Length: 152
Image (tube, rainbow, N blue to C red; front, side, top):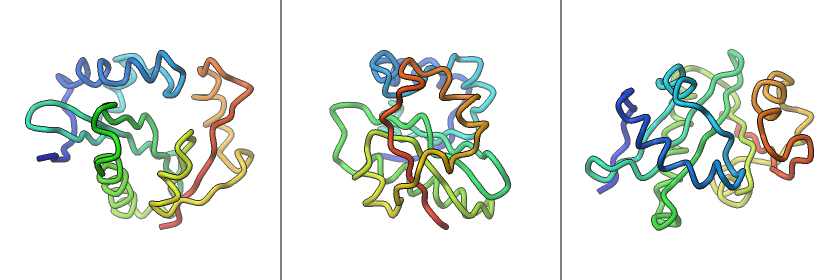
């Protein structure tokens, strides 16, 4: 049975192991353990007993705008609803913080559209996102990710 929980610093090693293939392929931006530790409260884990099988972060950019990022589900468990469970929990968390919009940059357009996200132009994203995160990407500045937003 899959359960959701907030991570503890001791989970960072397992989180980094889970995301490593996605980072290597350029699907997810690299985040070192210090950065994950600093932002540990923004993550939500999906666990099967004690094993982390997926996670995602809700990163707050402004009082009204947050981002779903660093989203991964173990390869062999994809398509079973775990990702939807995580993202829906993050949208509820955004509601708790009274954030009105949540965006994502992704290659998984259809997944996010099924959850109610709609495509927007990347130019609508906060400029600090581009210079704080996107510049670290091995595909920068030629990016083919899709920007999508969810109105709460």
